[in-house]
Amino acid sequence: MPSKDLYPDLDTLKARYRRWQHYNIRIFDMLSDVTIVSPHGGFIEAGTSHIAQLVAGRNYNFFDFQGLLKTRPLDLHITSVNFREPLLAEVLGRSRLAVSIHCMGKEAPGEIWVGGLNKKLRDCMAKALREKGFTVRTDLPRYKGVHPRNFVNMPVEHGVQLEIAGDVVDSFFSTPAKFAREVDFAPEATPVLHNFVAACRKALCQCS
Ligand SMILES: [Zn+2]
Image (cartoon, rainbow, N blue to C red; front, side, top):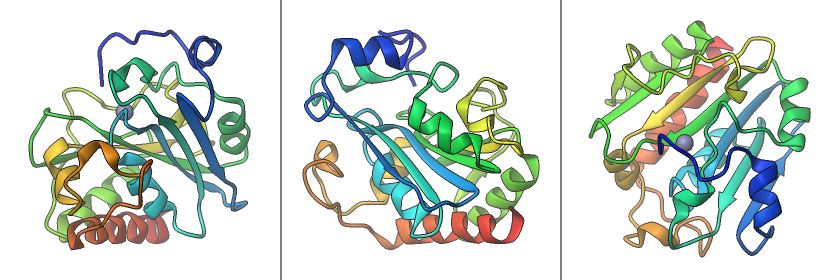
């Protein structure tokens, strides 16, 4: 989300911070050829860890980078084009496609932006989300997710990047404490989140 990251890459960040204390990495390898990623999870783009985990379910691989800093959480944001992690690279290397889940904060209230280089899955996901009542854009002014060095496009069939507005993420959870979601306790999902997850999984099932 920030235009300028504090650190150029994850290696620099890892040299400065400690795993478990400042950041965490979770990977659930289901030996699937589809990988769901929340690269800005934890407190960085709050809510995305939990959303991505639900989209992954029990059948798709799940990679989650969690920032654990409650103050200045965006210090741990590494933009997708620079986001390189050995465990993620390994699982993307044997994936056919990937989906990344982001929150775009105050940008485009009420909207979900669907980008990425896999146009078939992108359009299919946009259609499934619209059918569930979400306001979706695929003609994106920013956050297009089409850069070939964006990690989401590394699988052979590339991927889809979902950017969810902050107020839409808020509607996904009934838990009021915004910055205490997936790290401190299990968040309480609303029917809106279940609709979002169902739409994403339907598109993955039918169009991937
Ligand atoms: Zn992000």
